[in-house]
Length: 415
Figure 1 (tube, rainbow, N blue to C red):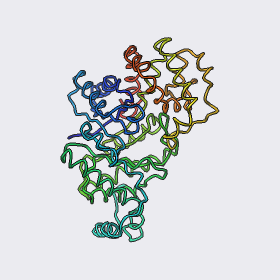
Figure 2: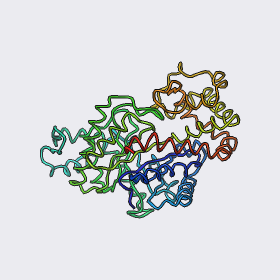
Figure 3: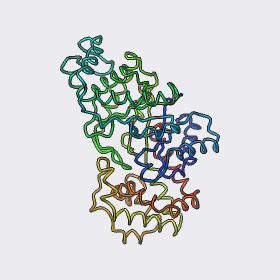
Figure 4: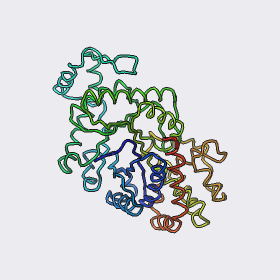
């Protein structure tokens, strides 16, 4: 299975926007940049919305068939582990092995000794072209990285072999994800993590580390852009070295779990992957859901009433809705407008407040983040929400397509 050099994860909470999402990627392809679509939806999202993985598969297949897409495409079992992977086995062909919770777990002495022995052929240090400082291969260094990451990668091996036993080798794409943690992994960490992945015989095609800075849901990157650029480029160079040295798949590439809309760092990534002629996977998650609310808000009075109701109920249930996403949102409650004020807005005002256009006088990232985590409210509305998505499909779909192409793909690939 061929993931392709560039791939783009599109999340869709309610399985209604597959064609609009794919249309954006078709436009990119017509502009000379083929981007492989990957429809992703996590176990948590399925549980909140009360959907099943078969729905994501049906949505993807229908979009591809209806629009005549002839390239490869995938359905991602996003952030899975051994406790829930079987739910996705029959419908996914891309598996994001999330082992962040195992970072720092203790490994057996036998496993640590085996890892240290496997590194003995590397010598006392490794020099990677383009990275000024050599990577030390000392007993102390190996003990440290084994203490942090060995248990996590051993768990990734267990998950991979479980999937392989059911689907067969070569019949799915594997990503190893360690991004949902507080401390970032350094390029030195990445080197040893890739060595462990190779030792586990995991044919990873993408790897998602945690980078320096805040990757909050639905809003821009917050952090030191120069530091991010340094880490990103060094990770690219480490991957290149590891592929050649450890026998990992040649198309192994970085996966950036962006939390959507990291516009500040998109040009940085674009420049680096062009400089080194490398691939990239970007997982956008929930901006499609936000574009649905924007589309409803500008579709007329009926849609605006539903958009207002979503915000009002989200305000009432802030703590409940924010709790699962506490590490990846940063809401200043003093900047959230009262629902009764929002109820007096026009649809355009509501949309401008929610739509992520940096510098727009109405844009409010706090408002945006709260609605981002409020999709549970829409799910509870049932047909009162999804029925309007169908009724105003043209308006909503154009918002989704414009968002992915104009605000994401153009920035990432200089279209």
